[in-house]
Length: 85
Figure (cartoon, rainbow, N blue to C red):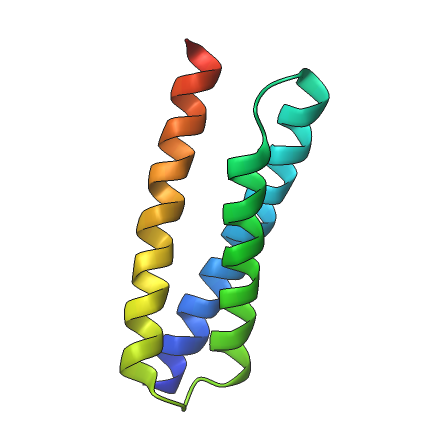
């Protein structure tokens, strides 16, 4: 179970960093960037928490991480839709 937590934490961390980079690019291009930046920061924080303490209430952390991944995916879809329309 601890390995699963570390993997999920790593995925959240990398995806959060990617969202923060996208937010910076959107800001430079004049697009709305605040949602992507907020979700990116939240994903990085959650990823770090899960990676640092994977043994503590693993089931709860994985559920929260899953929720963050869903919210992050929806935010990405929204940002792509806004950029293309």
